[in-house]
Length: 466
Length: 80
Image 1 (cartoon, rainbow over the protein chains, first blue to last red):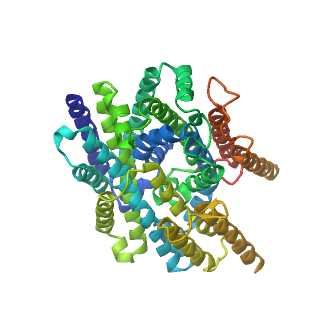
Image 2 (cartoon, rainbow over the protein chains, first blue to last red):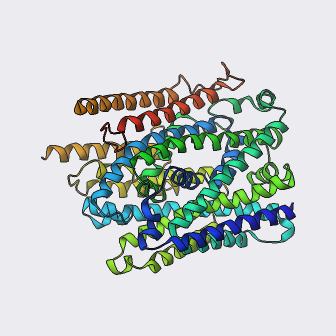
Image 3 (cartoon, rainbow over the protein chains, first blue to last red):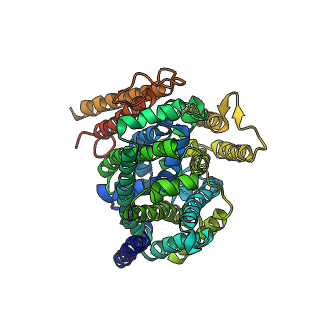
């Protein structure tokens, strides 16, 4: 397999280097570097959005999640993505309308301008830093750990694999900016979709086909065929909390909000939302097949052992090689966008002089990459559940953002401070200093409800003030 | 004429939002999320899987309709 890995790996890296060089040539201004020229059409737009959204979390996390929790995994992610694309039609319009009158320098800066309070931007930046850096880190770690186990004979430790992933991300994103990331996303998203289907179909054949797969699952553990699943995790409160957190991703995570802004026009953005919805279904479905294959064949294996076997060892050498490169691609496609978005958000908060220099964003991306790399050395391998914490954490800023966008009237500082309190409460609950459940609801769902109602009350009060 | 059209599109859009909410509420209700319920199956898929796949397809289809209703400018004007 190593021969194939070398061939596919070199081909993939060659394409990335070419795209980086090509984008660098096309970068004529700061706008080109940071916002990819803001004229993305349907195809590039939906591929960059999809590749940023679906990552190592999808290719490694979702098969393992469905292996352990069964068919409810679909509802956890695919159904939530359905809600997310529906929200994009409304939210994207609001966001684009707002930035048509205010220069878009990132969501942090936008919130500062909308609320007229510096702390609104700092709070948003704090939230995305505290929740996105670990998210980037767990993806890098997930892939690196898997590579370390899968290629034990090469004696390359996980941290060196991590360094390799981050190094390549920095190489092409600092050379060609967002445009290079968008082009790379196109390649990465396409690779992800093809690879996940090839492996999914191979797993289905190994299980003896569609009907046989469900018969074997029922024999193995009938709880896999319904909710809440064998471990009882996928209950209504958990799924509703996940639905809100995932639906809010384009609202609260800058790498995706930015992609809505840089679409050519509303028409392209609306079509992109529908395409992302289809892409989500297409990419998640085979991950369930891989997961079911694991539930039947490797029910007691660790996550890394199962992924190693299902994606590589049980496949032909060439598919295994593509799977490894697919994992690299998946980790990079999300990491690059998130690190670049973090850099851009920081740049938006800085003064005029720092903002006008591209060195600022390059240094910021480097700093965040180093933070993610450091964090990846200590994070756990529970990809999906850690990703969910990241989604829920950033979602706390959702009501604050939506309130700022739906009205042109000043909304005061109440929601800024209440959101800060919500984020602190959520963090304290994750650290077990506060309970993770309130009245039968998860702390995330409880806080979403409080913050949502508070935003609505704030809006009505300000409206009636005249 | 154009104003009437815009108004009609807005009404349809609001109805679509309500319908979407209904799909979401039903999907999370005990009508669909029933502990250990496997039957009825569809193409051998257990109940929880096929109902959720169907609900997801409906949401994506509603997204398409929502985009059409809001129009090319997103403000319900009928210039698309």
